[in-house]
Image 1 (cartoon, helix red, strand yellow):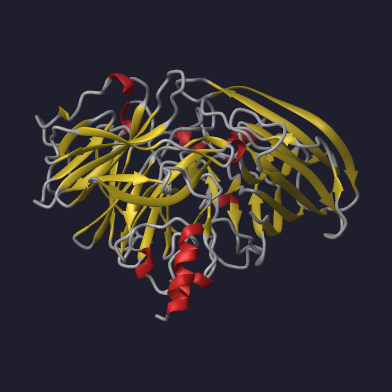
Image 2: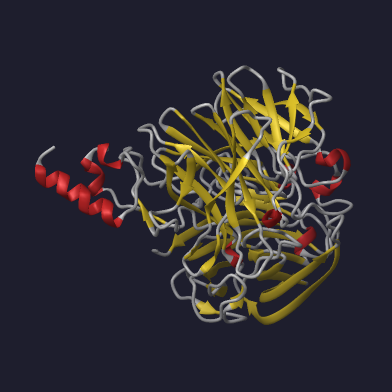
Length: 548
């Protein structure tokens, strides 16, 4: 490396915070645009990240969406793509089928991902009561799957699976609780329960989100800490010990707001092939959900300190030179394939007989299957995340085969929903912009009530129409609890070129942990309110994301 190249690296490193061995990386990185935080400006909460070889693997919470427990992969921590799911559906209750109740905000939570002796392992526990809340352990030879169920056992909240060097296996969960598992992972070893630390006075708030690693013979337990006191903030803490059973000492490793939004916490740390370490931590960002940020992890006095040299989440971090093409977890789709893309998830379990990609090649066909009186109980709503800072999603829909009372369209789907609804009334079609909301029981997540308000309605003379939702998640005026614009606008087109706005201007997009507990999703739907048997065909889903 010549002197000029070295100086260029020094200048670059000053502006883009890196971990300690960054200068050893190839200076070709200078030609690679940095990772801009948020690393994933979309709803990707409760992350666990591991590296196997030159590939990083990420799992996240998607609760009531199916298939569940998405696995994403990247070689540079910048370009991520969904490569598989740990399970196709949950079947313990008809609630997962939108029958006899719902599972909004429940289902799969906070999956722990590990790689051990040539196999991937995933441990998760639905946030449910009784047997529905059993902990599942899955395993696979490849992260892409197929995944096989290894065992089910008692519920462990926000848990971390850990394989120790001596062959023993543990689950660490709750607030500093531990149990040892049998070597074959079939169940716990009775009598091994222990509390590995007692919370200090300033940790009397919520303390959860366990993630365990081992480095240089020491055990590190990372957790989110909600401190409810004046001048205190959400933060990430680390408990460290020489023995997994303790005693443990504690250090605050991150206490930083970022980008005009709330303080960050909950996630993990991971090393790169060159030996650098990074933190992957999520942040609440209102209507878009809980987004992911990446930051340097510096080992200082044996503690994994997160953030830049000032302990703050940086605006940018330098990616690796991996040769990985640009990828994304949210994608446009022309529905030309015979299988549904991994970027899609259904709201609750789908009814497979009520959708098709082959009956009309090049189209997604959504059929009505049961009569319901609200979108919140309708099966086969197909979703993708919305993304910040701004994004647009649109569909071309053919409604020629809808029946009287059928509703179909495109929604900004959440517990408070703005939707473009095509409704069949007798033999005529109407386009409505509708504001919808539902209330759920706290314990069972049953839809106890819902409201629908038609803001604007126009008659349609054609059975084909384009529908579009534009979303804005940038910080700015009108900020609510977490800041940000958090709004959507709705429009339609009869030719795919000229667009006309309809309904509420700047419809407010929200996040409610008491109900859906998720960021807003694009939702494509078709349901019957009078008689099943109708259907619509979706020609394409177009997606555009604004620049940061």
